[in-house]
Length: 388
Image (cartoon, rainbow, N blue to C red; front, side, top):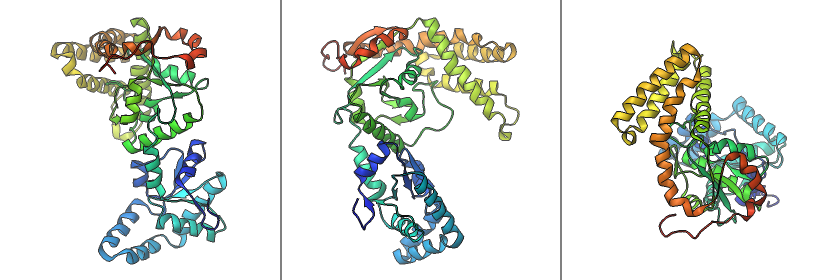
């Protein structure tokens, strides 16, 4: 940090984030939502409408008039409330720094107002733009010296839950958690996925944290798209050549796991949301049925018309019986068909490409025995050209 200027460069600011210290983001809520950085606290100097108004005047009458309007909009009690929120964050989190979009007027003003109120806080040189530029350069695990090992296996093996269980023991990277999606046609999580830039930022920060671990990182095998989020090219290329541990379970166990993920979890979420008045008289079971039918329609082309129609009737009937008899097992038949007709053929196709990368094929209960030699795992056989 340069003494007297109260600045911090973007690399040092990112080390704050990688070590769990927050940054104060004074950009507008709109900017924050589409380009969020993890572990940052958004306390804007200008709200969305205020920023839009200042921007309009800037284009029409130039920077001086725009600054005048900004000072007028954020003055008096409004200014003091915003300064108080910044001071509260600064006092609660040390080290801390603030930033705006480009390290310009907004962060300079916020810094000045804080100093006038007895709080010195450095601002990030170059702002979000500088931070983003560095993060985009840190999306390649190989360049960071990070060695990934992928957990692969058929749908319903419980790969994500196993990652969560192992997280306190070994380094793991939860891509579905970062993307807020379960990675399949039936895998939406109740809530929105982050913007693409926000996902990339979170992924880069996670990789920077793992860089310091100097251990192998366990990652779930994913396709390029996780919901509507696209994995960055350099990261996905590294995944394609990473060694894999294949998890296997009997179909009965996989159905039980999907019952929890696709039915129990979703029904619990719909039960919470069914209390909102705008939903009227729609019951959680009706919401579940609609969601399952919509998800089924996404794979209609691959299922074929006859199979899709048969499964749709089974799903609707199962939801009615589930509600009437309070028996979740009525979903088992159509879920087994979903695995056998749709998910398993997709995995078998994927398996032909990744087979040379598989080092071990085990039941998840045996995974604990493998963990002590995780760092020794290497690709079993040389890659076949074009199979990566």
